Image (cartoon, rainbow, N blue to C red):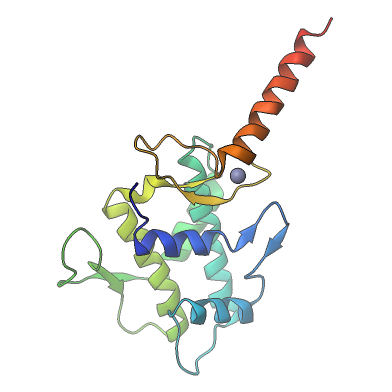
Length: 186
Ligand SMILES: [Zn+2]
């Protein structure tokens, strides 16, 4: 079972700051995003996350979540994808050397960014590294839309669609069964 690389764990944690089932968002204020970035070790020092930084971060997160939904076959919301792409243009990256190969460590936030933008650009780095290594497709948003939890697919053929077969897979199966019963009913 391949362990999730650090970049995947970071993107997964970022994407899962939204809990669809509970209807909560751990990053619904700039202050909370500030605290989250510090907790992840991406932001240090006295400079705070501002309202514009916060808005950028949420746009990137929304786009990433759409992309991860596409990994289980969901049709992504194109406007969220292009909005995230636009937001990412404000978080430029550069290619570096000395990363040790395998994609990881090749990208870095561009010099000259503010501390908050650099922290957000680090998320873009993680996302970029995942894509470069081809591992991004293992990161998925649960196919059960009421759940929509992001998970790392450890299956050999990358075929998992639900975060938990026991809960979400069975939920989907039960609904299909009920639907079939309804159409079969006289
Ligand atoms: Zn789920």
